[in-house]
Length: 370
Image (cartoon, rainbow, N blue to C red; front, side, top):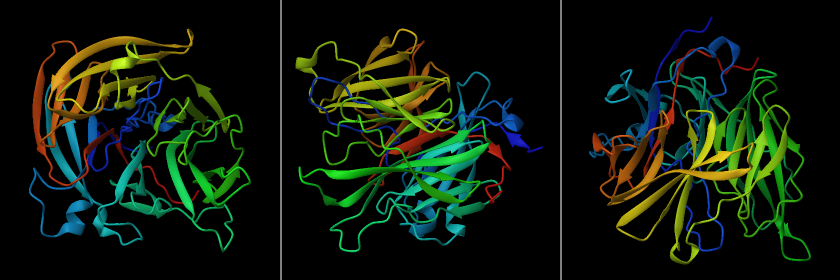
């Protein structure tokens, strides 16, 4: 058996939710990667902690910048999810690998294993269990690029668990360096398996219409064995077990004429339901719309709307009725959707990227090749 401990993992880095300035007729979405794909040996474990990466402890940047930037902390909560407290720190700086000291971001969290990606060198991806301190750099891309290609782009990634084969997988978007006749690049997807410790190309969703050079936003959300990206004109989904892509429609704003520069983040609600939070970016007082995806009805439904001042960005939902946010002073806040109470959690950071939060279960699951 694998001992597990309830928890939440929180990180200071680029916000886990997609930040997208949008001014077309459809809203945009991003992520709180609450990967709740639990293998049989952990399926009864409750998650009540947050994991976060500390960029500066309560706003004070340590002189040991490399060590400080790679510090991940655990926040625990009581049974009512009303009080959060800092429990312990984990340090990625114990390892030396090819990743920028400030650049790592959490791609996802599953069963105590984190997938981290270099924010600057996106091809650098590692799996890490903070409890056992096992770290595994992923091998190079399986996509062969011409030596004279003008550029090479490894972009959007997602991390999940295939319950059918009990395998941890990473899927990512890759772009070649040459343009075809109509000046569009050729796009690829590849899939990593921890069991085989290798990447392999997978079928590209050919029906996807790429509106820009970067068709998928860098951030994804994973839940129920699938991951989701904003893809310009839709939401792209990937099933880790069946290894197939599918699509969801984007929601429409209730008043498109007044919703310019809209920012949205795709979130996991109660670890099982896909949701999104949208708001207008360039205003001091923001109106936040919370919607959930109703798969049987094939539509988005609004479940809440709230107005707050001096908020920079939402980070995600907790327990279905609490929302983590960051204010303009980079302070972590918690908003209760039931009581409408907004309170500070006493955590602050002054590095140029925003805070990010993921649910986390402390466990001794191994990431050694099986």
